[in-house]
Each structure stands twice: as C-alpha cells, then as structure tokens.
Length: 412
Ligand code: HGY
Ligand code: MN
Ligand code: MN
Image 1 (cartoon, rainbow, N blue to C red):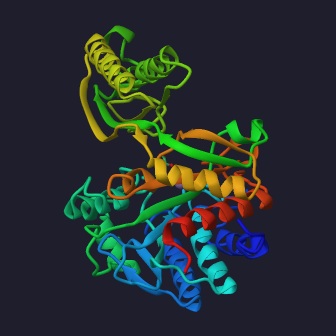
Image 2 (spheres, rainbow, N blue to C red):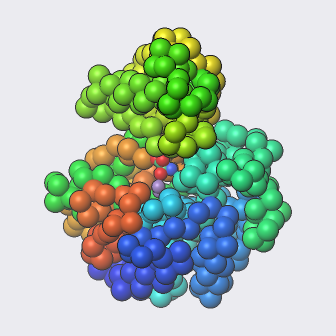
C-alpha cells in the first residue's frame, strides 16, 4: 500500500472527541442511549459532516443511516462500513462511534486523495446496537439481515413503554427506505477490541475471524411480599433469595465452561425494593456467550435445570424467556484476507482474534461478505466511562479499513 493511502489521524481523533462531547459524563465517558435527543444530536452532526463530504444520505425504516459516496458504476452493490453511535449508560468515547467515524474518515480521505472507486461506498450508523435501552442488541442490523421482522424491531419497548417506532418518529429518523433486501458487495466494521488481548500482546491490529455466539434471557421470579420482621424464615417465599442463588448458578456455569465461556447477570429489578419487605418479585437478565454453539446449548440446559430446581426449592413462580440468540459466526475469508493484507501493507503488528462482543457486522455477515478490524483499548476496558484508546491505534484501524474497503471497492 503506497505511503499516500492513509487517513488523516488528527482529523479522525478530533472528530471522535467532538462527538464524545454529546452525552459526555463527569467521569469522561458517554451516555448517549439509543433514540434519545443525544442520539439525535450525534446523528445530525454525522449527517452534516457526511453531506459536507459530498455524500447523499439514505435513512431506512429502522433509522439506520447510510452516507453514500458514488462510485464509477452506481449500479454496483456498495462496499459498506459502519457501526453504532448509541452507548451504554456508563459507556465510553470509542465503543461503536469509532467505527461510524472511521467510515466518515475513509470517505474524507478518498476525497482528499482524489480517489474514485468502481463500487459506491456507504458509511453507516446502525440503530440501537447496544441493546441497553431497547432489547435485544443489534436489533436494527438484525432487521436489515432478515433476522427480525420490521414490526418486531419497531415494537421494541424501553422500561417506560416507549417503542422504537415512536422514538424514531420523535427524533426525526423514521426513514422511508426499506430495511435491507439490498445487495451489499462487502461490509467492514472497525471497533475497539473491548478486551485485553491486543494490548497485552502489544499488537496494533486484530484481524477478526469469528464472533462468539450469544444467548440473552429475561427471568421474573415471583414469591410473596411480606414483612421482614414477623415473617419466620421457614415461611418465606423470597424472590431475591432465588435470584441470588441463580446469579451464583450462572457464574458457576460460566466457570464450568472456562476459559472461553462468559456468563453475566447484568440487570436486576427488585420489587418493591424496600429494606423491610421480603421481595415478592424480581426481574433479572442473563447473558451467555461462547464461540462453540454446542457449549452454548449445554450452558442453556444447565441454567434451565438449575433455575427450575431453585424456584421449586423456595416455592417461587418463574417466567424464563430467551429473548436473543445467535450462533457463533465465522466471517468471510475474502474480507478477512483484505483486512490482513491492508494491515501487513501498513506494516502493523497483527493477530487473528475472535470477537467477544456482538457487533452489527455479525448480522451483516448473514447478507454480505463481512469482517472486522479490531484495535486495542487501554487495559482492555469497555462498557465503562474510563474506556480509552491511543490515537495511533485509532489511526491504524482507520488506515486498515481504508485499505480493506479500497481492495473490495476497486480503485479506478
Ligand atoms: O453486548 C454486546 O456484545 C454489544 O455491546 N451489544
Ligand atoms: Mn460496540
Ligand atoms: Mn457496546
């Protein structure tokens, strides 16, 4: 790759820090939940920048935003990149938004370099990747890939009962373009690793070959609310006790399938959550992950058996629902090679890696050749306000994205 085929590292860093101001938290992170006014503000800024870079803008019915740079032959399927701009409640300045702004930087750099491509290029924002405000995660790229119906996607509700459809309309991003059903020549997503592997190996680029599978559950345990004082211990139906035992069970299932299994209870809502009332109802979530689908199924079975026993032992009602599942993914070998080649041509240190988190590229891989580029993050921490990355890593990931996209979009 010639020396000139590089992005403007200062510009992408500045762009990232500009967007980081939208939803900035006191601890240096970002809280920009999906389809809030802050999400709208960041989307509007991105659209403005993309228009300034000469792109046309398309918004689909799930609010996915596509900034299109024409190719020499616009009848050809686009080479796409993108990620998400929504964050966790205590999110960082890089998760998702880095991949969105790297797409913009690729377009800006192609403009600076006066490069035309045979295929059009599209840089995208995928709605509600985090699955924090609206569950499940990656729902809009899931609709695009045909994993979920449009009606299912638009009907996802937040804790206040607001639907994605209503919130898309409210922020002005209920587009009219159909969701998916279009050919995509290739899709690349650049993202911070969100784990410790690359930094510990002093490696700049992660060539993402696979993504682990996930199973998400919602569980409601129902016991009997009663007075913490006069109710004898042997007369209680304590929903929080059951939850505590299940949290320990989930953790044990993760440890029993170490070193690759991940098992987390991240959300617990206790009712009535009063210090002198024995909880009568508890809602909580379970998140299982593993790169091997059979192991993921084994974890599922062990959890279901354990939950049934715990509920019976304490005399609790139990509603357990799996709300999200996708099998482990192997990305497209041609796209993986394009990433590897671009990294080697840039003389970056590289290693193959499996994505521990879910990403929009996971669903895009079902409808297009896709792969990802990882860069390290400081101490491997993400989904935390301290999330951080070195400017040289950010530049490196964008350079590799440029090279990989050009390889598939074909410079003319
Ligand atoms: O949960 C995930 O893996 C992603 O952050 N949505
Ligand atoms: Mn992400
Ligand atoms: Mn995330």
